[in-house]
Length: 393
Image (cartoon, one colour):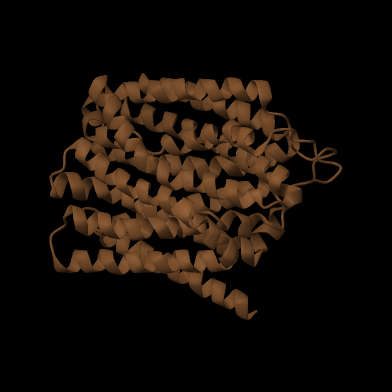
């Protein structure tokens, strides 16, 4: 660690326990309420399309919020950005539970996403500050990035259980309550890690022009976007067409998360051997394989649990291989502007996911797996072409 960098006195397990809850909350809020969306329009006197919009709004808020909070964390520090973000997230979660109209719910979801963005920027920038040149960074980036992918798969199960016992509004009270213990923990133990001295002037140009940054941000967007399209289409396919109940859907959906957890543990030795580029290449290859399976199932029969869930398991392994290393590839050269680099990284992938993923769902039939097939075919192909061009140059 360089001389101008404050000492982070926590052992690795303690540091993970301190940081991980904020990453988990930002991920969990993405779609914990997914099983109850059919009941929300009547309660909020809103069109169902308005409620469906809240998922895209959350992703958009994550991206835009990080562009704002990244430079702020470089200027004022990781700790104040984290604490203000966590407080915003907790307050807006409580207000969402009391929302009286659909559009008020949309606006509050955007504000909740901004709080989540601040938490993510501060957490990932802290990892870059403390572990950027150490092998622990791969392990932590892999854990946190995997949370962004597989925690939302558990979210609907949890949301269905909370809603069944209480109501859909209790889901958002639950999120607010979950935020308070890690916020208190951070107030007590989260020390500042931003390099000491005058903050450097934000210079996004060199970051955005970096070929490695572009390729690995696109790779992260390809992986996360495939999961977003899966989240957007799976309820319509499995509930409306296959006929699963809310709980049955949530359990089937969670099987993808289980595959991700197993893959994240089993793949770790392979990631060390393959390196960043090799792991991303294999991740993109698995996404392409899932695209072929999704396309075949859409072309040759009516949807079933097997035709949707089994290809999603292949997709899940590809997501894990990619998100475990793509942050290292994208951020490696920008330790002096870690906050800004992290912000642009997440903003880029959020825009890819929200815009391209939403476009795939709109252009293709959202009650089929065609949007999944199109997305997991197109973006991984672009990533592989970019990696090949980079290797030649």
